Length: 186
Length: 153
Image 1 (cartoon, each protein chain N blue to C red):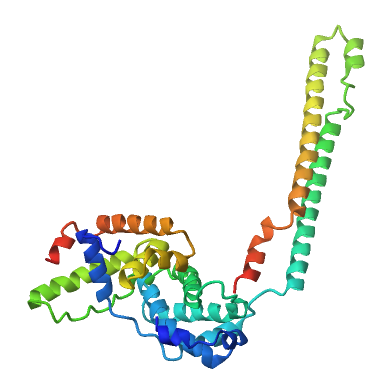
Image 2: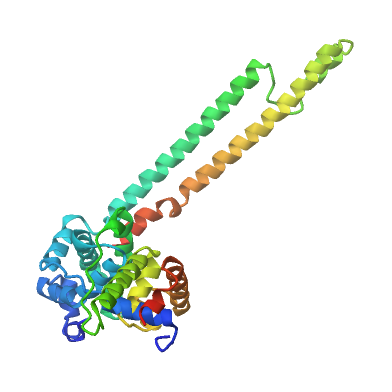
């Protein structure tokens, strides 16, 4: 999240439906919302549509935002709910193309780089097949480096639930991925 | 948790962070606003109230109609078998008058059972109709979806 942009957001303008303030809110949160779509196996136009649905839900709910939680937490809570719904509607989403891995400048050789790329694709693909809440917990905890407490706030559940989700997601990923995948990195 | 040295944990963290960010469309905010304004955010309270009332009346009418149908069905059945719906009047006079005829006595006993079953069915139908009516008049559960929809933007 672009912290500076979030701090500059005028909540009262947002509540009034000010388009400029809303565009700032979208800019501040779009990276994370698109990341959540990715983690649910949504790519390209499907991800764009899901992100638009998330922000449409945010826009509609803004007049009722009471400020009891941080704005970003509130946005992500809506995002988690809307993306899970969108994902259920898209039956073929998981079969979409995965992102191209980045070229790792520290890779020692082209072979090592290819192995890393393949491993990355496998992990991302496996994460997309997890249950929605598990995938979201993995996305926020590992990719965004959020604390368990932050993930719990965004997902609207107790911390212990997040720990359980992460534990189960890890076990499921271990079962889905080849046994030697973590040794491939060394 | 982030300080763990589980190799799989480290692998997961590294791999997830290496994932390229998806680019959002430039007109995301405009699309979202357009989408939000395309359909009403909530069901207005008076429409929701009217919808709920109509649904409850329809449920109640359906339950009463089913009850009436069952009642007349059972009544027709009882009449065709020449049964009385009054408890206690179980062909005793008829059976005592023809006590010597064993086949008639057996028939009377069977009729007595039928009468008892008719009463059990009647009580059941009335009870179920009452329960159905009570369920139909309960305010929220069958319409939680609509109420939820109204709350959710």
